[in-house]
Amino acid sequence: MYGAERYAGTRPGTPVVASMLDVDGEELVARVAAGLGISDPWDLNQHAFTIAQVDGQALRELFATLEFAGDYLADLSRMTRLGMAGFHFFFHIKT
Image 1 (tube, rainbow, N blue to C red):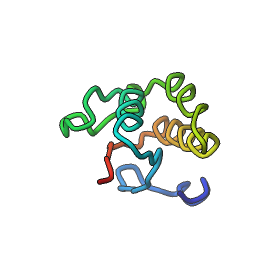
Image 2 (cartoon, rainbow, N blue to C red):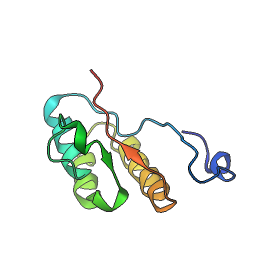
Image 3 (tube, rainbow, N blue to C red):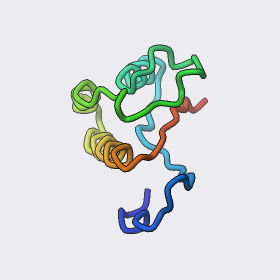
Image 4 (cartoon, helix red, strand yellow):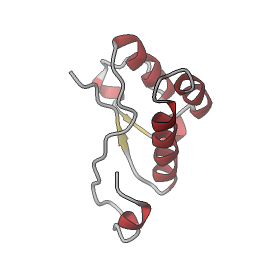
């Protein structure tokens, strides 16, 4: 992710690709997906999601237990701001 000033002039509809909330392990992936409003991480039909689906409190509680809590919480904050600005999100499981 770049600093906020880099996105200031981005026109609506411009695709911006960024990786956030990068986690490993099936159980953790499933818990993050659930926090994003995705009931089945392997159901590709659910991979597009909106910020309105995100359970921020559940994700904050989960991230607080992880080694890199600050990084995950910063990503969640970025995601929230981007979502409020109209950006779209897609869930991706790294394999």
